Length: 158
Image (cartoon, rainbow, N blue to C red):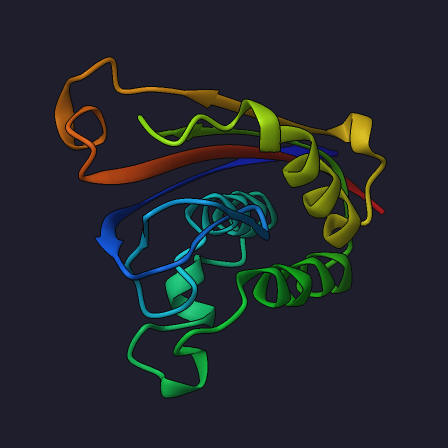
């Protein structure tokens, strides 16, 4: 049996924070505000994996009310989720994701993000796809107020 799950996340941009996407720090004057490192892309991937495996969502496993997760490295959280998914009897087949932001442009960083996600997911790079889009000047993304990310994960029974 094959299953798929989707994930979505968004975070506000804030001066003085680091901008981390898919475990890769992106040079920027503003970063993402959040309880953890606010890696919006990794959070979307986590929710996609948890959803596909029927294991709830990121907030159930890593609540923002728990101080253990303050400034947490989202790639470590992703590693924990990969372990949960495998323990539940699933194999991760493919992850496809999109980051939606105005600036900075991600073209120069997409391959590094793909490589980092693939490593933590335990997948070949060809099984992880990272895309980037903009808000075309509309909405909170278009106004440069925040960043959003979407992901889909495919799982097969082990």
